[in-house]
Length: 143
Ligand code: FES
Image (cartoon, rainbow, N blue to C red; front, top):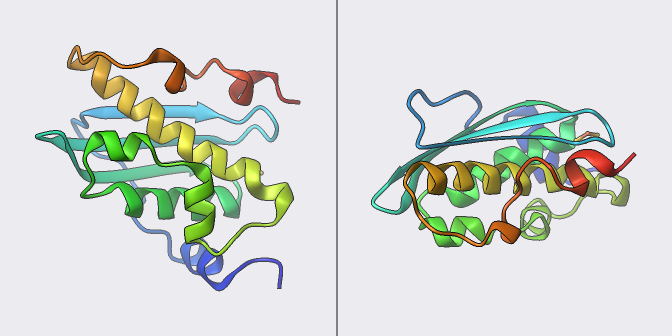
């Protein structure tokens, strides 16, 4: 079987699909490789992610990783959410086929872009290198 049961479950029954009105942080990133787009909305209260929702025009792996990523960051302090790696999401899903790993990068970058938006709006300092600006190699240069 190419996909794990967890991937299939999150693909068939994605958690946290939708949008959050008046979100504290919104991040949108695109994957130049496949043209897929992911948008993540965060509600942040007292430095903790209290809610997360996503919308994606993407493949099944992008849906499954976004779904898992939102579950993993809800209830976490923003610093911890910022450290969420695509590797951790893939592990939580019991793996993805190698040629689908790039799809999980989309989820990690969308979370980071949403946090960056939150930091910008609230004038919180951050390391710009660590956050996707929607302008890096993953977003544009891969072909
Ligand atoms: Fe584009 Fe998966 S093929 S995100």
